[in-house]
Amino acid sequence: MKKPKFDRWLAELQAELGNLDGAIIAPLDRLRHTAPLISGIINDIKEEVLKNGFETNDAEIHFFKVVKPGFYALQLFELEWYNLCINKPVGTSEMIRKFYEDELLYLMRFFRNNAFYYQYYRLGASELDQQYFLREGRPGDIPVLDVTDPLPGFSTTLDYLFAKFIAYERLQFYLVDQLTMFYIDKRLEMPLPKLRWTGEKINIVELAYGIYFTGQINDGKAEVMEIIAWLNESLALDLSPDRAYRMFLDIKRRKTVSPTRFIDRMCEEVKRHIEDSFSLKKAKRTASKN
Image (cartoon, rainbow, N blue to C red; front, side):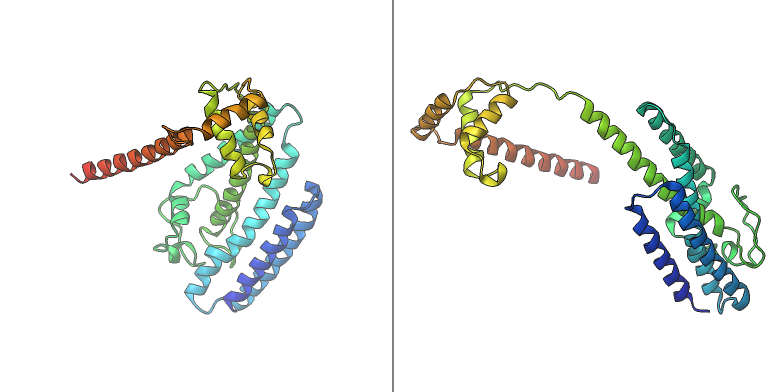
């Protein structure tokens, strides 16, 4: 029995299920499709393992540490995702947020309750693989809290727990994504703060023409007076097009100072801040060495 075949089956199944992620499909319809598909492949693999066994201990360890957990993780995720969907409350956004947060806390408790084995999984450790992932291996000194009835000839100490780690991590990412979208939506609902330009108006004219000449707005197609009108509205200015044009003529006629005095000052302040940041980091590194 060759290891690459099972790896290939796993990759193909992951790809097929991944194609469903972007599809508009009801949770029950998805489960009706995925559950028998995954179960059928797992049964085929189980029959082959029980019939042919493994050529080496390394092959057996790889199967029960990587391959079998990979298949079972897909099965677990599909079921847990379906349960999330059907149990999500029909109510306010706060109720839905609380539901997602409670589910996330449950997953975090699961990882904490299995902290020793989860760390073994996350670190990719291998020192105890013969104990944990050979069928003849014995349970470790630290009890496994989350176990199922072992399948004779098709189970090891940790293969099912590793499958739950994989599935629950994926579920954790899903919940975090849902909560992130919730908080983004909440922020979009909040009114933006009112900002006012409190500097010299000639500086905003210099900035507006700088934006115009460098083509930063609408692929360079915005007119300078459109940019000034936009800045007027955004920053509570009262700057007429005629006055803005006269101010730009004053900028062009500057003799004793740079025509781009304000932009030059902005450039200097940004560079100074960057240089100060580098100096502070260098001083901290020097202090830590001493």
